[in-house]
Image (cartoon, rainbow, N blue to C red; front, side, top):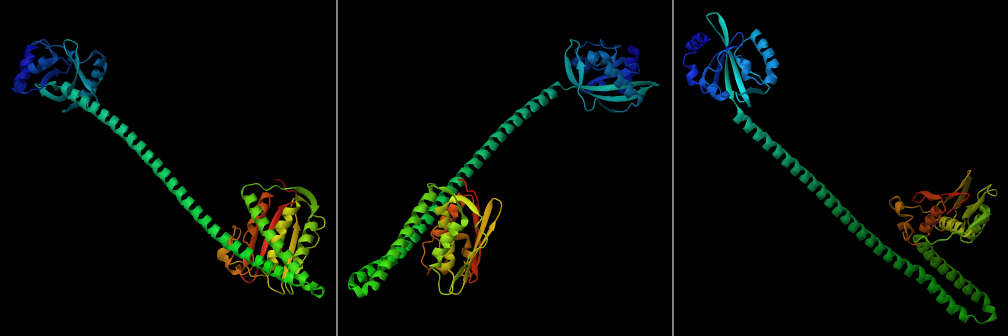
Length: 410
C-alpha cells in the first residue's frame, strides 16, 4: 500500500503539501491509497492511520449504503465535478463527531490503474454562519410579519377611524340639512299661517261689523249673508286647525283609526255632494258607475278626509267648463280610484316634492291652501295599507290614483 501511495504522490507532486484543503485518493475498490496531512487534521487521525482503509470510514454509518450507490453511479460516468450537489454531505471524525463537508471529485489514471482524488473542505464554520444567517432571516421575517400585522392593524384602525369620522361628518351634514329644512318649514309655516288666517279673519271682522249695522227688518237678508260668511270662514279656519292636528298625530304615530263596515258609495256620495257646492261655472263631476256593491272595512272619517282633499283639489285647480272624472275599479281584495282633472297640472321639476309638508307648486301659489293636505292624505293611505300615485302635465291636468284594501287593518 505504501508503494501505491508513493506512486500516487510522485505523480501528484507537491499538490499534497501546498493545498489548504484535505486530499484523499482512493483506488477502484474505494480503498484509501493516499491523503495529505490536512485530511488527518480534519478527521483527527495520525499519520498513515487511514492508509488501506475503505473510504467509508470517513462517512457516517447511516450514509454507507447510499454512499456506495453514489460511488457506483459516479464510476459509470466519472468526471471532474462537485459531489452531492443540491444536498448536504457529512463526514465522521475519528472521535465520532459528525460535521458538514464539501467534496470535489477528480478521476485520473496512473499506469493503467484508475483512481479518484477527492478534495475535501470542512464547512462547519460556513454552515454555522449560514445557520446564523437563516436564523437572522427567520427573526427578520418574523419581525417583518409582526410589523406587517401591526401595519395592517394600523391601516384597519385608520380605516375605521376614517369611517367613524365620515359617519360623524355625515350625521353633522344631515343634522344641518334637517335644521335647514326645519327652518324652511318654519318660514313656510309662518308665511302660510299668516296668509291663510289673515284673509278669513279680515273677512270675519268685516262681516261682523257690517252685520251689526243691518238692524232693520228689510236688511235681514244682507245680515244673514254676512253671518253665513262668518260661519263659512270659521269652518275654514277650523279645518286648517284640524289639518295641523292631523299632521302632528301622523308624525308621532298618535292617529287612532276606528274601523267600520260601510259601502264606498256612502262616503263618495257625501264627498261629491259637498264638492258640488264648490264647482265653478260650467264645471261638473262625473260620478263612477257600479260601486254600490263595494263594501269596505275602514275608518269612515279618515276615508272622507282622503277623498275630500283629492276631489276638492281637482275642483280648485281646474278652470271653468271642465269635468272632474272619478273612476273606480274593484279587485278581489282592493279597490282603485282615479280622480282625473283638466286643471293647471304640476310642473315636472316639482312633482317629487308634491307630498312634502307645506309644499305648494309655483303655479298654485295664488290659490288658497296650506300645502299639508296631500301630506296628510299620503300618511293616512299608507297607514291603512294603501298606496297613492299620480301623473300630471302642466295645463293638461292631473290624475291621482288611490289603491286601498277593502278590509283595512292597522
